[in-house]
Amino acid sequence: MKPTLYFLRSSEQKIATDMLHYAYRLDETGKKIQDFPELEIYSRFYGLSSKDLGLYALNEHKIAGAAWIRLLKEDEPPVLTIGVKPEFRGMGIGSAMLEQLFLEAGALFERMSVSVLNSEKSISFFKKHGFAEVENSFGKSPIDGLEVITMVKELPKERVVRPTDGYDPRKWMD
View 1 (cartoon, rainbow, N blue to C red):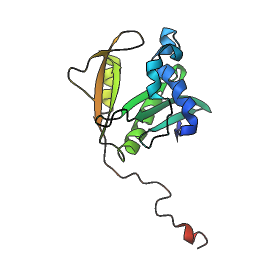
View 2: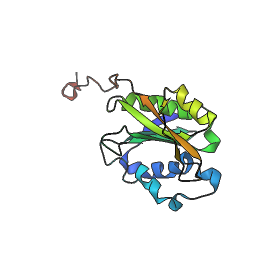
View 3: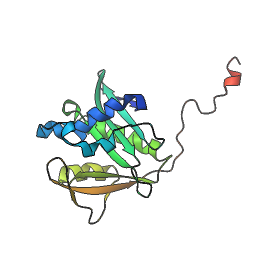
View 4: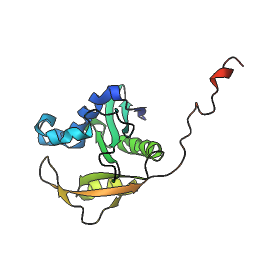
């Protein structure tokens, strides 16, 4: 079943906070989000800035995952956070969320960045979606100390066309 995607609104900040658990592999380490206050910058007060943009996926009436970007520093690209619950992995939900997010984000930003585990599986997933490794951008995961690398994607500059474009409310009776 194909997931249904919805914009992540400020009133749904809890979804972003809950998905941080999966984005940072806390489900695999047995740790809790409260153990890592430095991760708050990725979800706290989500949606209260015009520079926050995200969406979440529903599959069989359950939240399956979320992907969002936040502009943390003016001189740098916004940072992508993406998480998919384990029972929904391998179904293309992450890819579907990314492709839609790229279209939406292209209207606001020239590129986005993501920090991923320095593993073949993680890097190949993001390369498949057009991300490129940033040279000498190695760091350590705050969760378990594993090596991470920064990747950047240039975003398409296409105008997003919505069904309501061209709608004139003065002519609703015509």
